[in-house]
Amino acid sequence: MISRLLPLLLLGVCLPLLAEQRLPEDYWQDLLLETRDAGLERQLAEEARLQLRQEARDTQAQALSEARKTLADAEARREQLEAQQLQLEEELQEMQERLQRRSASLGEVFSVYEDEKSSLYGLLSDALITQQKPRLLEAFRPDQDQGVPSIQALEELWQGLQQTWLASAQVVRFPANWVDAEGRPQKGSVVRLGDIQLLNEQGLLRFESGQPAVLWSRQPREAQQQAEAFVSGNQDEVTLDPARGQTLRLYSHQPDLLERIQQGGYVGYLIIFLGGVGLLVALVQSLRLLAENQRVKRQLQQLDEPQASNSLGRVLAGLRRETVSASTHPEALEARMDELLLREAAGLERGLSWVKLLAAMAPLLGLLGTVTGMIATFQAITLFGTGDPAMMASGISQALMTTVLGLVTAVPLLLAHLLLQGRSRHLARTLEAETSAWLANRLGSQTLQRS
Image (cartoon, rainbow, N blue to C red; front, side, top):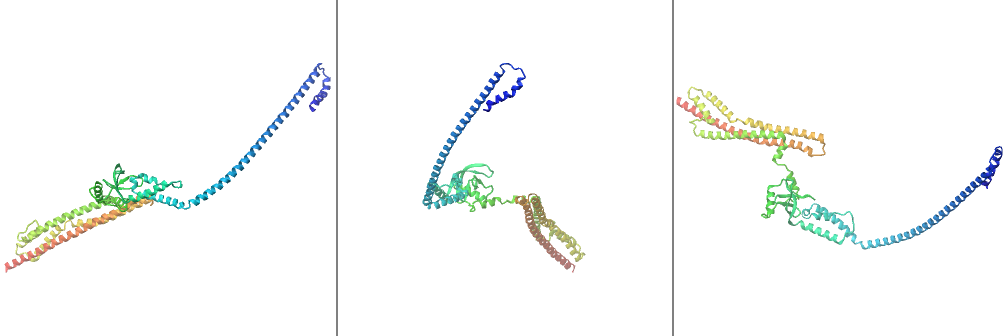
């Protein structure tokens, strides 16, 4: 209605303004037609808009109806599933109660099975039979899935326990891989003595779980020979390590004489060198005294014919020259005898002072090695701490071994010095006694000749 009145109002407003102007004759007719067409277009657009709104409203109503229907179906389905779930839960609970009643006696069996399986795996981890049957250890590895064991699993566990028990009392020869003392892999015949020891023609073998057997790098020579003879079938006796390798491990880690000497370092070498020099001097002096003793014994049988090759003969020859003159006073002869005896005694004790000196130096050098070894130990503690004892072992070994070497060197040298000193003093007393007797006899005969 408003759209129809709007052209008229515009016409009434514009008519006075246009009256003053001169317009064409058909102007008002064209204006009326344009106004009528515009109103018609607006009417058609409004009707189209209303029609679209009605169609959208109908579509939304239909979608809403379908959604409500779908929701009702879903609600019904949910109620049906909930009823089924409740029914299944009741059935599951009933079945669990039935299973619990039926497996009440089997629960202990399954528990014992798991315990025995774990125990058997631990036993096989350190058993020698795994070298012969490597798959036996893998077969009884504890499973992550703790399910109900089958009859076959129970039978395999029983068979595994039986094989392990029987293997502890068997002597079996089987082919296997092993490693020699130089670390090279080998393959050959290996003999298993129960669950105690492995051996082959090279000697005794060291067992390591999950690894090939390794030949001991150091083992008793007698045990190695017995193992070779036993594997070859030439002997029925063999050396066993009842500690299953622990004794051989300690034996292999025990250093030999050369390694102990090397632990002493340069101070240890110096002590051994000085000890060798001292023993060499003592040996030479001992041979000299032994030869001199034999020559003196031969000279005792021929006192009237003194020889310059022995000490007694030289003393007697010197005294004979003095007693040729009858005017020589007896006190002068005694003084001359003492002089000759002291001169020969010095020759008999030659080298003993060196032996005594070296015997006194050896413990002092051992103390020096102890001090240097402790200094090295404290330096290692300063650099690396006390977490690794192996870093301190070198200094401690040097400190201990130098002390041992010093004492071991000093004791034989002191004993040699004591023995040589006693032998030289015995010879000196023999010379003094025989010379005094000879001189007394000579002076007595001269006195008789004068009278």
